[in-house]
Length: 409
Image 1 (cartoon, rainbow, N blue to C red):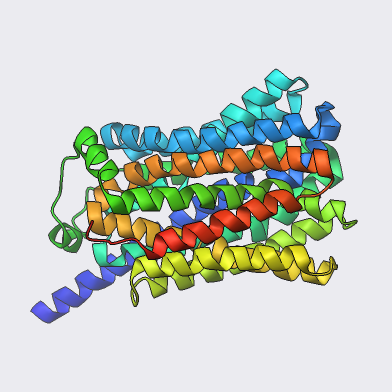
Image 2 (image 1 turned 45 degrees about the horizontal axis):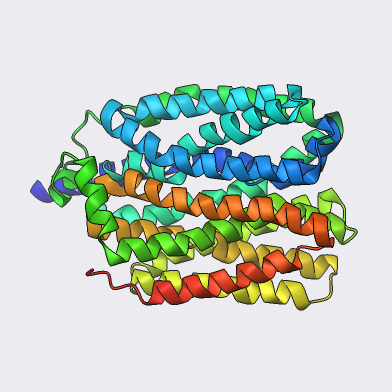
């Protein structure tokens, strides 16, 4: 009888984990699908508003920083008031940003919509907050694997939403596209309420015995983190991650167009980017259970400069560009599972939302830099090559830093 009870309990836990994982994937798909496709919207925004590329790039850059800054703040709010409040707010703010953006015709109004409101909503529904919501409801031994699966849904954001956003904007313009996008997002409110509610059941008893419950001293946690060589090295490498990824999300479609390819070609290339993002993220989570997480992190960072170098020197055919864009996706989100896994191992599951959020601020400083400088680089030279070379150097440095992490420090 005891054996049967244990088996039933295990089945309940696995069903619960699977359900929470699917819901988390849904929200990451939705939020990342909006954030990662600013590049698809770029030319439509310029045409709709008459605001030049360098100014729109600056707004995108501020949005990158706001996206990062929001996350530790939301982590603190979620720790104090609960995750339901945060997640529901995220859905409503994203919808508000999508509805208001097409009415922006000046630099200031576009800045408020695309630089503040929309990035705030997307930042609330980010990986750190979502994984922090479910991390204390699942067994700790599953966190790295689940984080890899959840983070892989960033790829679905490209696979599903890149062609949809491009098609909506091509069909009816910026206003039609963004307003149509806002409607299904508002219908996710019941799901947000469910995901954010406190776990009142005890089906997660194995979770409770897996690790002790803890009251977080935010000040002490942050002080301990910034004294940790491991956390500092992770943060340094994450700056480069933000620089590299923002360059892809905000400027790669424009790079396609500069080579004479259509926006549809860029959208479908980003869909392949999404497919390889899923593969890379899931593989990364799996490798973290077999090898040292710092080495997995260093490996995926090391793939980035090689891929970008090939992108620069290879002939600019649609096949080459699509394949290389896809391979950029393979290493794109694969750095997140080892980072969240190292944080969990060193500081505990309850700290993930906040410490990942603090780190992501630096990630988005990198994103701010490349989103803005990418536009300036193209405006001055007619090419993204110089900013891509900077990305190569930074990514190589991040790989070396990651390999040198000592997880006991």
